[in-house]
Image 1 (spheres, rainbow over the protein chains, first blue to last red):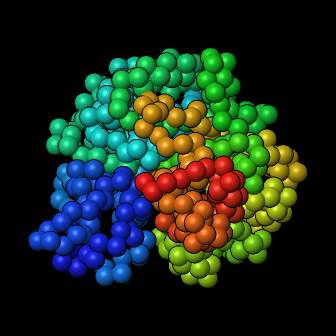
Image 2 (image 1 turned 45 degrees about the vertical axis):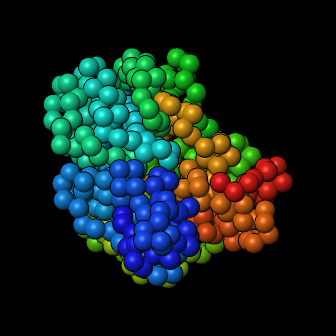
Length: 243
Length: 213
């Protein structure tokens, strides 16, 4: 995002909308105006969409690769060309009744880097991806972040992307149920080595009591499971066949 | 993506925060799903949600209900937010009877959602739980503000805006309901719950002392 310093009247109405706290004030030729710290801005577009600027000074330039990564991952209105899904993830469990992506005996594990609200730089994301790759996890191919992993065995990410920052990016994987404690242990370990936050979640095909085998196993190993969560009601058709 | 998961809160305020949403599966049942998604949204609208939306169009406050419904596409993900499980039970019953054939997901306190499923005769298919936040937790704002900002899973509601709205209410420049609606505005999907935000702000107005920031 950029702010036209000629138009800007320095009212500051946009500043609080910035998800990254990247809008600041400076003086140019004696005029105080708002400006955007381009290193910290993730091109989410919130400040512009808020429509609070009285003089339309905010504008979003169209960026080429690799800067374009920021908007693609941070602005939910950007639809990924590969997945046709807007946002920064996949359909994950939302359509599992139809896709059958998560089968009994397997668990979907997602690590959403930078959520909530801190954002994540690519080197931080790479640290976590590499820690998971070392365990041999299967990264979700339809997830846009996976396309930035150039070596899925080591977790090495695209070198040209390393200067970029995103509001959040989801490392999405499918693991056998019995691997949940091992993978969570690795996630917990790498959490101590990064300078941002991430949110973690588990998806399971519900058991006969409607419960999540993955979450039950994680709880057995001392992880705190949220009281709230998401439930796919199984109303989609055709229902996925389960092998 | 898990845009309705990871909502922070306690049992008391999360019980008034239930999101019902629907989408079709790309490449499987998405073709001509627009009508079904619109039907779904009309059911939602009849039950007076506190917010609703489709990220392609906007939310109740930025776009309005009729616009949201009219602009639904096959690839839309459509949402509505409710504050009572009794109302959600009625909504789900109606959705089940409509037999739309699209995926329907409910976010809320799991025991409440599963109680509703039992009442309506639905067996939960797939479940997703948050394991919370890990990493450099010192970078996070106060948990009270996170309870507000995490109601937009895409992170469109800044903690700075939440703090600013609280300050405006404390100064008497905004009513809590107005502040909550301003907070709901950036959440393009319409999954932000302004009623819950207003309640949280009301509590914080009495408890927090704020200076300029």
